[in-house]
Length: 305
Figure 1 (cartoon, one colour):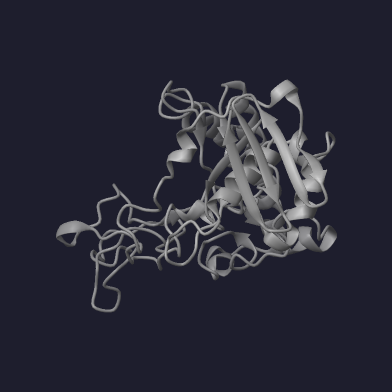
Figure 2 (cartoon, rainbow, N blue to C red):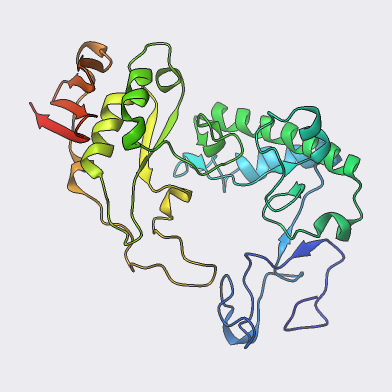
């Protein structure tokens, strides 16, 4: 039942994590504070609810055709992509194949991720139920991804290494600089064959700690389908460090946006990839810029042409 209204209840499983609540003395800063002492989410209490993807065709057709690519989704001309987070995880499936994305199940336990850790017990689900739900959810998500692509859209989990919305963009590391670029400069590398999510390093004071190097790395390593954004986890939301739930971010307007992100660097000159011009120094010609990154000195340089 709703905490502020004991008569407003639901027979459907839900928790109140990461959902709007009425502030209390015990919890003065919930994830979204409802006004006037009332959380109005419709007929049911506010909460995280779950679909049973074992319901098959009827549920999937509604999710795909209405919720995902309908008029309020990718079917709207103003929407080109969706941020679809979280997944189901099964201990049984992970035991069969530990290499499954998301294994082992620690977010927080097996079952739906970022949902109360007692959800399996509260719903009366067996381990086999969790395995069946996980496989059914995967089937639904496969159809969702195909439908989004068919509409000319995109979704986060299609990025390389983001299969379960890991929120972990590829970051340039000083001690890995040479190895990362040696790999990226190869035609058959994952950097060139897949859509890639790059990150800009942000320190605890919400400052860009190595921006020239990060931007140089992006222009050197990127393939035809690459994106650059803030942060280590969650693309910094765009704040870093990420505030605790219910707390405000350290900067009211987020991380500053450097003017360099709005410059036109053209396209790779002649379609060429980056090359190691001398030991530890990588360069790439763009039609409007010459980009280099000296991994020995860890210094990035972009000269406009």
